[in-house]
Structures are given as structure tokens and as C-alpha cells.
Length: 255
Ligand code: BGC
Image 1 (cartoon, rainbow, N blue to C red):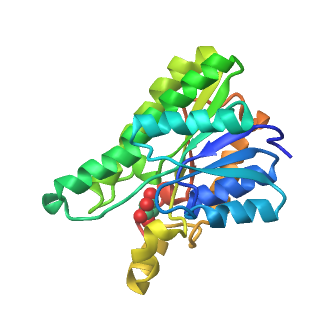
Image 2: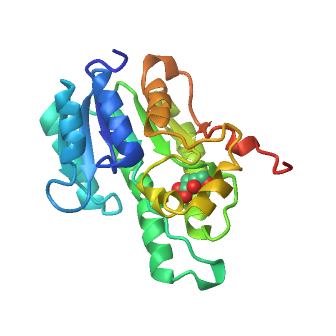
């Protein structure tokens, strides 16, 4: 058990990568807060997975782009578990359009969830961790697209590029408090965010051709890296991005 008695919040953990991280953290002994937005019951699948495996978890609804709700999530966590050790910014959304046709409302929504969200959550989590005085771990789920361009995905790519510099900057600022800040950069992970590609064999084939390992990643692949960064093993890592992408960042495009 690598996260015994740690308390972790994972945003957007009702499905996908967030669900994988929440389940893994709980199996490593952490007490987990499953953040979600939507109808009551949205987080039940993650909660049941954790409880069936004998883990401890609660669900809290919080829109990460709303500072009042973010603070309520931190306060609810302290009330339930007494402290906060690990915060994972996983919630993210993606809408694809050709650049010249990108609707402003969608750009603003993507920025709100993918960038303002992690900004507010890191801020609120760091304040709590500084108050506790025992350091902490901030882990942001970014993307290969914090570096790699993706046509039709300008707004998403812009937020992930910004998350890269948010992490680097606050890692330096928070280091004095022994709070580490790192990004995980997933490649193509088989989750609902890629439902359009998963349902279209031509798109899927084109995507697989960009991945040297030739397959989709799994939420568990990301959960393994998140566990490393949250555990004692990751204590000396800060201000970095760790890509978990089947080699996607290194494909030369020459085949
Ligand atoms: C995006 C996916 C994309 C993957 C690899 C992810 O960040 O959400 O749409 O397939 O990167 O390009």
C-alpha cells in the first residue's frame, strides 16, 4: 500500500482516467474524494468500485471553474477526512472544430474547465496544504497536446499548453512549502472523451498509426504514474511533465 492514510481529491472522477486514478488510489490505502458534476448518482459507479474493493471514498459535486464550489469541495474533504494530501486535476473537456469555425462559447467553456479549473483547484489545495504544514502533491492531467499540435483541437491544445506553464511556474513557487506540482501527459487513452474516434474505424486506424506501441492506453496506465507521483517514490519530482503515451510524442511520422 503506497498511499496509506493519505487523503486525495480527484476531479472529474466519475468516469474515464479520473475513475481509474480514484480506484487505484483507494486500493493503495488512500481516502478518496470523487468530484463530479451532474445529477446525484453520477459518481456511484466509481464509489461502488472502490467500496467493493474495501476502499474508502465519498463523492462531492463541484464545478472546478467555480471558486465557491471548489472551496466547498476542500472544506467537505477536511470535514470528512481531516486533511488533504493529494489533489489531482483530472476534469477536462474537448470539442473539435476547424479553427476558423470555432464557436466562442465552446472556447470559453474549454478554458473554464481545462485551465481556470486547475488554476483555482491548485490555489485552494495549496492554501490548505500550506496551512497543514506537511507539504503535498498537486498532479495535473494534461495531454501530449501540451506540446503536440492537433488540427481541429485549437482550444483544447491551448489550455493544455497553458497548463504546462502553470505547473512549471507554481512548482517553483510552492517548492518552499514542500508541495510538488507535476503534469501527466496522457496520449490516446480509451475513455469517453474519444468516443468519436472509438466509434469510427478509419479515425481509429489513423490514430493507431501515430502510436509506436500501436494500441490505446488504459486509465490504469495513467493511474500507475499518478500513484508514483503521489507516493514517497515521487517525492523528488517537481515542475515536470511525465508522458504516458505509447511513444506518441516520439513518432517520427516517416512510416
Ligand atoms: C485527446 C484525445 C486524443 C489524444 C491523442 C488526448 O489529449 O483528448 O482526443 O486522441 O490526446 O491525440
